[in-house]
Length: 213
Image (cartoon, rainbow, N blue to C red; front, side, top):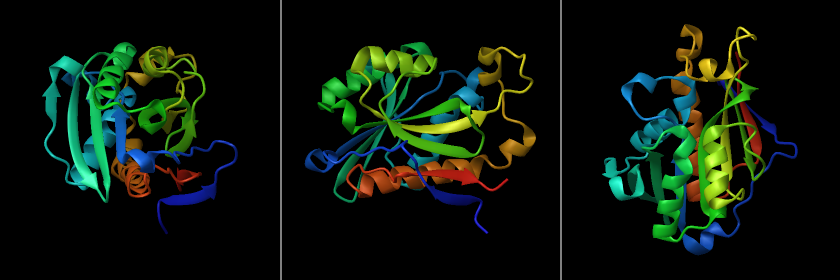
């Protein structure tokens, strides 16, 4: 049996019907730069984009200093897909996303952001568009710079254990050994979601995906 099961998504949906007119999709992974943050829960957005770039044979990452990000591009079907990993710290991510979106003239509804979500259990992936930051500093920065109308691939990293730990300490910690053993499956599933969005002219599948663990 697959590690993932697909369930109808109730209410938490995302539709990018206008993307086909533009044929350009901007996908953002959130995280913090620097080796000390590698493999931390807060950097799962970076890990997912690295896996997607490798699986879909993107061009090598380029350091776009003027736009404060690493960028990789390819064409999937008739859609141009631009991946970026901001080189700012998490709470300034909006600066990079705004710069790239302005340069390529990409509207917020044609942007998908992959990020960690503390309120979702590890192994579960939820899709949505719009909404508040829910206290996530990266999303808060994006909303300040480009508004709320972007899509989100919300990758669960919860629950927080132990409960009394500060949330900031937990998200900057590393996954448990058991969770690490499932990360390749998790990033592969996110890659599949992003591929479906690109080949579907930006329409993310309207469902929740979960590990069977």
